[in-house]
Length: 367
Ligand code: NAD
Ligand code: UGA
Image 1 (spheres, rainbow, N blue to C red):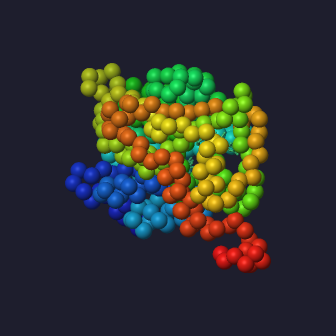
Image 2 (tube, rainbow, N blue to C red):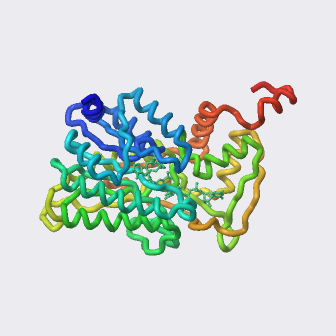
Image 3 (cartoon, helix red, strand yellow):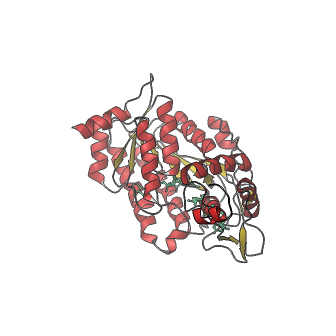
């Protein structure tokens, strides 16, 4: 009963016509930011997260602490736990689901392929099954990925480009998610909006991503690996700042159609929508490193690898015309500005670790 009370309190909106949103992956990077933004504008938010140890779970706990200060409660549980999800929908008439829980990262599939199938395919289907049976049926906005473009050579990528050449198992499961969403929209009239994020970075970010561990390794004086494309060019990414992505997620929720409870063939039924949420300005990894070197006042020890990283694509570049047209999405943060904010957060969270305490004492520096 105490649990139910917390669940209700957290998910009850404080503004008129406010949403009641289930945020999956709420202890994650994008999920924690979106949960806070929704709560701050008066929507009700309930988080769900399994707190897995793909990366440091203490960072997920720290994000959870931050959310709890803002009265956002996170239920610990797995997407594949049908009875738990059903219970949540029994207690709360969610108007929306922001589905961000997933096995992210491209390289980890070489170690644990099953985790991608379990969370990104089976877990997504389980969530859709519960949402389809719920009354009311929520509108669902979920995270797809720029990785679905795979080896697409159109530049920039627009939503209609081919997505039949995934370069990693991660990309394949995200692509599968889009196909699965289509069927649930078509058969059950569920409103589904997919967001293809492009390499999102910022404060409270993911330690498995390059900008994050480059910062750590540069500060600790360790060497960093920089991969090249097959033809020895620099790899480039359309790095997108977290605040821009949060605005895009809220815009997609605000303009999501209502679920109709019946097939997509019905007149006026919700259409499956998919949008790019990128920055529209690809940056080579070498430039990312030099910005970090400047912000950290430390030279990186660069180890150039003359091959692509397993599962990597050579470049990403978003065309965001569609998201602009439908919900005014306009990225405003350039990479230097965003990385400055990240580095500021990183140092306040972890402290300067460039040298051990002993080394800085020996050289007469203060902490
Ligand atoms: P994240 O790993 O920080 O967040 C995901 C959260 O989901 C984690 O806290 C994890 O514990 C939780 N989770 C994973 N599997 C679960 C399961 N089966 N049940 C319950 N909880 C589970 O990742 P993120 O960067 O915040 O990414 C959010 C979403 O955006 C993911 O779907 C990811 O694939 C997608 N995405 C991210 C980026 C990016 O650059 N960050 C880019 C494209 C797409
Ligand atoms: C990121 C996320 O990790 C995925 O979860 C997400 O789905 C994807 O963005 C996306 O946009 O869809 P990625 O762009 O590969 O994937 O992010 P990083 O792993 O941080 O790599 C960024 C760049 O740094 C890549 O070009 C990569 O080649 C390069 N890199 C990475 C290196 O040069 N050295 C490294 O040691 C690691």
